[in-house]
Image (cartoon, rainbow, N blue to C red; front, side):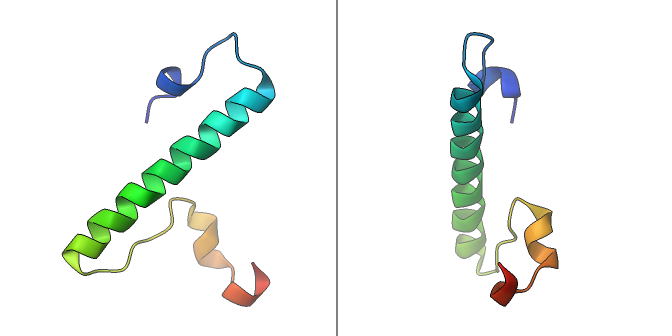
Length: 57
């Protein structure tokens, strides 16, 4: 993912954060679909999610 494709200097900080969140959601959805097609579990884009238990999230 290239930040220059989703962000520009004219965006506010809030707009940049929203664009980043959308890009990450799209990337995760794509990874989930590809994993499902292969019949394997998908890993979260954010590796920190692998280090915390579900109850603590």
